Length: 248
Image (cartoon, rainbow, N blue to C red; front, side, top):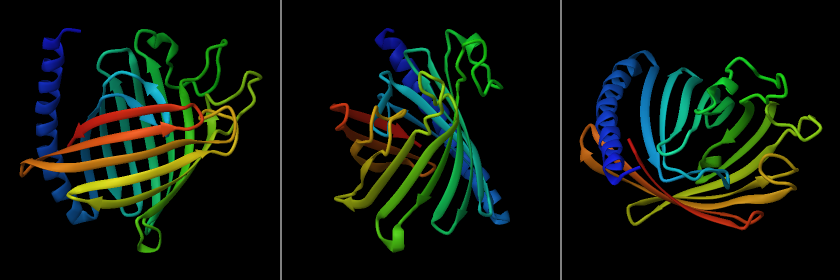
């Protein structure tokens, strides 16, 4: 892809993002009066790294639409590679009590050059073709007792998460975050791993040690630009990644 096409995509994303930000801000302010809210945001990241694993090496456009009412939240999050055929659309629903939440995610991923293999309603293997869905139940406890610490526990319970004998692996992830700030930067330290063989590792192991730094640049009163940089080390795989992102 030429540098011109890169610049064109970048400018197009910023233009769309600015308009979506204004729309979402107006919509949210109206919705909040009825204790409901609708929010829309978008990010661009240099590569797709999640819980210590590299899912795609190419730059990604990642939009999210979220509706909240009372203690319930539902939404959709996506990741679309800008230079490859990787695509992902995740649905989620969540229930929160104070700072504890339980969320069920439906991760739906695809190769956009082989969409005939990505059937949305196929939640199990069909004709030796694996499902493109993985269902994940996640519990998160944020700001534990008013501190900067948070805990997360996650397990895959359905879909494309099985071994070579087609036995369900129940891939799991346990993590802790610590959030603070320093010199106008928001910092998040993360430590996490798996308790057993599965998606994240071939054995119980720490798979994610990371530091995320972020700051908000007030480009416009209705269009703040969020910049972030994340360094991630996977001790089990001995991989080191640095990811740059921006979004609204």
